[in-house]
Amino acid sequence: MITRLIRLGFLVISGILFVVALSPPMQRWLDQHGFIPNQYSYGDLYNMSNLPEFKETDIYVNGELTDADRPTKHYHDVDVYTLGDSFTNIDTSFYAGHRNFHRWVGNKIPLKVSLDTTRTNILVVQIIERVLQERMYSPEYEAIFINGGFVPSSASHPGAGQIQSAESPKEEPNTSWLLTRFGTEINQRIEFILFNGPLAIRFKEAKAELLFKLFGRTAGTAASKDKKHLFYKVEVDSTTSYSSFYPITDKRLDTLVSNVNSLRRHYLQMGFREVYLCLVPNKATILDPTYGTYNHQIERLEANPRLEAPIISTIDTLRQHPDWYHLGDGHWNRQGKKFWLRQVNQKAALWSSMREK
Image (cartoon, rainbow, N blue to C red):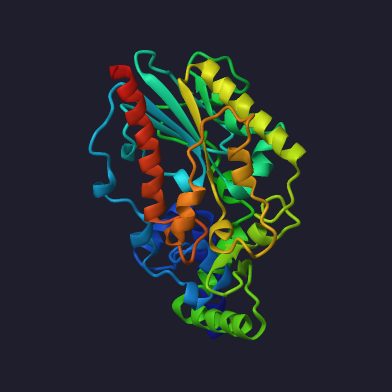
């Protein structure tokens, strides 16, 4: 009888665990109510390494924008469009345009928009340094930044039935619940739920700290030379194009410049008044540029005389403010987001003032 009860209890617990692992919304609800740990509570770099010295306990306070960060003025003769990655995944109400739209880079479904010809439409394309070569060097840049970016509402586009409207609240088409949840991350979710509770995490942190102090080893991450910062491994691995220390030839850079120019021309032809390019440096570029032989990719591209897109440059300012990156995460914090918003909103103000003249 006791054995049966144990088996039954094991089956019930396993079933509950499996259901929770299948449903991210349920995980978020349980996390918000303190029943399970949050995978991103202290930053993605801490989550990979489990090193307590990089456990940013106030990461949400450091990373979230507040009402005080909203623009004091909106420019009703300018519409602002942004196309970027996780660094610029920001509520569009923080931009100063009359209408503001954001598109996540890499989304396979384009966003259908109607440009208001009575207003100036500007587009800012943001790319993090570590994926610049991967996303802009090959012909795939068209699929990423054009086919998956903004398209005219009247456009005849491949897969047009899947084009997302700017007014649509959903980011992806309707998909089977089971097909959505049975993914490659389910094992990771189950492992996290099981082994990241308060007791288990203490053992993981102790092990990680011991390996770090004795052998300088960090699981899934790389430490700076002075051991004060963590980076994604790919940012410092000079054998991958994601790295700040990957050798980049002038010929390769020229191809990248040509693709950026083609991207800009496409959106100008679509009706945008201007298309800006903003390159965000890797955390390793700012916090440990001597880790290897720095390739100066961003500076070389921004200074290239063939580049047609005007630049919103961030690298020099970020070098003066390394604290704008999270301690336990690879992204910039609230101060970095505020800096980005200032740059974009200044462009909106510039175009509004030009219309008034």
